[in-house]
Image 1: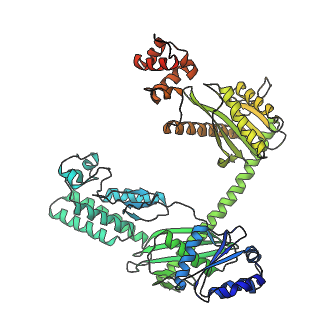
Image 2: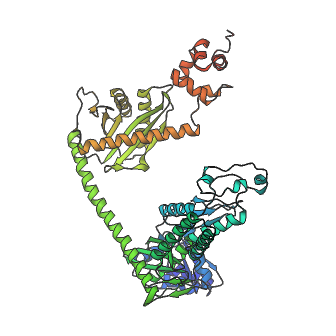
Image 3: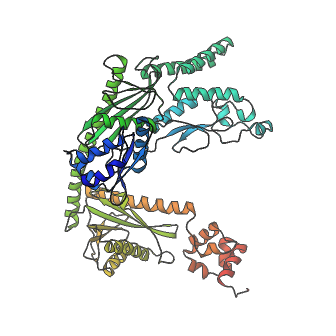
Length: 602
């Protein structure tokens, strides 16, 4: 859209707060922005001379403008974040954070269970979190399990079921991990008191929990139950020590969110510390991609809104290193210059710096690893006398279950590392029964016929895991496709780990502990794993079907038993009633025999 075109549109845009959306010629949203004054803000894109090439590119791509009027700048702020999160426009700031964070759920049920989940369901249960570390959540749950006796069974503990004495206590009760609500040995109010302790622990509110255990210890001493008092004392010591390690701003500091930002060219890094009752209960550093040379306050303001929403933060104070325009209601923005809040800010910045250093270390390690991988590939090229460096390797393997249900799998390695998006599995379509050679030929044909049709790059090396028969079948497939000269085809012996070429009598033996042979072993093991996992998943889902299962009275178990013994449906059909009886018994044998021999009344 040109400035001249915009002149006709400008009078229709109001001088009110709201959000504006830019669409390209395919009517896709490419940018969402907020404004105190919509007309002034949108007009600035067409009247200013931008030094940024990306902003100039954005304006050139605008074909349609839409806007939404709202009541306040705060409403515009919230709506802008919502639309960016939903549509992910190309030119908006993008938080590179697509994780599914874990929650701890307190189920909406009698005597609520407490457990880890990644899925929030609208079932009126209470979801605490999300949390940034699965490991830490598990450690926290383990501490809760040892500290607060809660049930972990799935029994329907309604008052009626308990009164009817439908349940018996399990081992957890005898171990002291549960107080036996299933037999009415624990009242609901007492159980819910434990649930409240869990909530306090998860929210970092440790003072009432410590107070509870002090009262428990006092009562135990009064009853001369000194062992029980010792247990309560140890829990108090643990919590006190935990609090001492975690408190960084004092117990009276209240709830606050701390954010810092470091920007490097078009990438920014934002750290978030969630502080509750003086304790850091969450920390997260996020990578942010910018597109229009947004300044640091704008990036930080956007990131704060997104992170507070993600982690369900309700803190009314936000600590930041510089002034930002953050219009959320009833929020205090603090820029500390000294004291505990300044220390929190410094701690947050330390986390950002550590995160950036980790990324750089990983990049350096990756560069070093890639260099080493190239050296291994060069050795493999020399050992197998390949025409080009095998930067793209594919490997095939067949898999079956005790001679039944054959499938094929293919894994792909690029630059010596797995490229899992290129992995493929093949359900055998044209082969009846167990025939490894024909199965291999089908898989190779289907893979490279598709690459040929889609004009995709071919691998420099194709490995067939198996004997000379499978290799010959694969070569036959490539020859029929006219692709025999497009790649090098080799077989890898299963036991001897020898490499052999089509038509060669002598194999190539690589040094046993050489890096090139280790790479081939890794590729072979990976195709085994991938093929077996695929096969196991299909079996567990019951997706293998055959003619035997279509016989009335014959289920998957009997069908599998017959196929394991006779190897194919064709062989089952050829058996006499007496032979079938020896395998599956007379009743099932008669059903199978009559299915294949309907006119035979013997």
